[in-house]
Length: 460
Image (cartoon, rainbow, N blue to C red; front, top):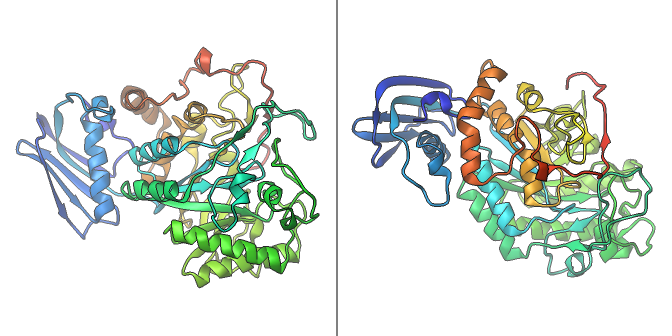
């Protein structure tokens, strides 16, 4: 039987009553005295009662009940479950923004894989999917007014395998691409909403834009015809920051807001090789356009400037960045980039970035003044849903507890719950996570180069 000590994230308060219940039907009611997204789950001999602050709280109450029914409740067809422990669980989230970025630009993920990732987010009570839709290596959102963005910009001739030194021209020669038609995106948004997840789209400008420039060369600063990029890293080919290009992207963003009801829309602003007043003008112009449509802008911290509207949310991924009076979502590379390597062992597949173990992610402490925090799943080196599973889990489970559960945390206690109760749930869901002892043989990538980095900065 799964006891209350097997719940993940760890709840605010549990009052065991002893004994077990067959469960039976659930009764749901509203209790506005609970914090937003909060719930009270009561299990006794008469059945199950969920009292919730709102619809999200009711959903999370059912997720807790699902965990108590045992791993069988996580299969595609629910098999007979465990008896339920009697008692009361009271729970609510620590932060309102519990996000995860999924990069579908570097390696396209088909719609079914995005829907599955939303299911996994919901099982961990994460509530914002930051969908990174455009980059140098691909444009993934259909824009009927500008069809070449997908007929040209969604496809590249090949991909770097691993992380060679910058400037290496070689790629694997295997064409790669894909994009989401408008109706697929509407389906993704609706599927997420049913699980109380907001999909926040990102159209990244003025850097990371070579796929768009390949489609419409006049968008680029040089005006030259370029191919969709086949390598990784910071790219010198940025947009021409002119009135004409700004108007192009205003029209793109108007289309984006017609698909995505999210209050917040991301326009990037990161890793532009040369930033100047034009960069500030360009980003601020797009954010102001979003505000005219009743939305809020969201930018990476390089886009901070006095010209940025006050309501803009900043994704802080650099250490010690001063975000001024802007609302902040903590996205620190040193702690929450889940594409980074998980050990120093030679079998670790494509070892890039900082060493970030499961314990490291669990030890991360978001700034209490932030709206919340967000893990990042960049996919330069994650070319399939199986590779995403390996990089994201179980570290995303640790992150979920960090942003949901308040109070002191013990990694040893978390690992015990994870191994005894939560990894069997992931097994039932078919998640090909990284075993705590290291990768399975089929999860290694022998001979594929990586680029490890050492963590030299202090805590973020």
